[in-house]
Length: 199
Image 1 (tube, rainbow, N blue to C red):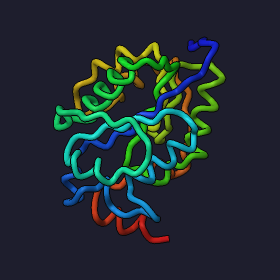
Image 2: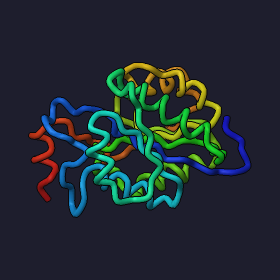
Image 3: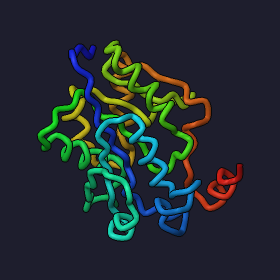
Image 4: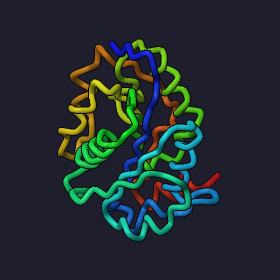
């Protein structure tokens, strides 16, 4: 059980993938008055905490379009998968001068995950009842999720395309979950993008 007396959380946005099913740079697709990635950054910054961004494929093009003040991390092994980007990001955070009690991992392609939902996650985490606060997908748990610093070493060892699913499965007793009520939908294809873009 997580019992730290403080509650400083870093947000880690994963945006390193190639998005081969989309056929374009998904992170830069227009969304509202910004882009999918810009929307994720905006929502993350509403939590008033430090925001870190992991880029990989098309990093140079994406980085040029980032207007917000975030810490950018380049994962040269992005093609290995999501786990690699988590490991790269958490390692970078761990090498910094700031000490965090937890890391909130989120994706750039879940545009309905808003500041209010992130606040619910951080609010639950601040109660220190469990070391992990995750999103409930019905038949599984996933991101956005917050992992206490006791899991940082495990997160840094990830190197596959399954993200932190195994950590969530093996530590279910130390996990509390939230129903995102549909906000967890992600965008992977042009059809999904067109569908979700409509008001």
